[in-house]
Length: 128
Image 1 (cartoon, helix red, strand yellow):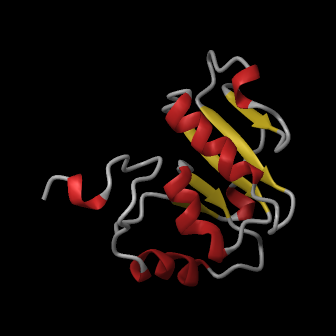
Image 2 (tube, rainbow, N blue to C red):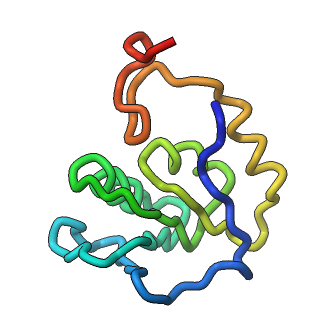
Image 3 (cartoon, rainbow, N blue to C red):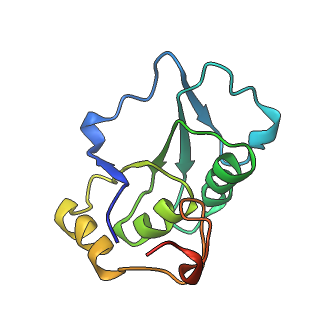
């Protein structure tokens, strides 16, 4: 599996800017205007709160958002592969997380049988 998820160090993340929408993890993405938005920041307030995964999937698959979806907050190495599969395009790692360990996560999982937000078809239906 090739890593498409961009990893961002906490000090390199700018939370505000033109075209950036920070969406609370209890907000419904279907109820906000995405006009002029090129990046949506979805927040993980703690490791065990996975609502942002659902928001990312909804934005990519149902709403067709093609801009950047960035994970912020308690972003741990263990979550990265699932983040990519649900539609995130970048993630701001928590300050205590090891970037090299994060990059190795993607080498551990070469392919997935089922489809996801990025590769919608199951493995057997993908072109060789």
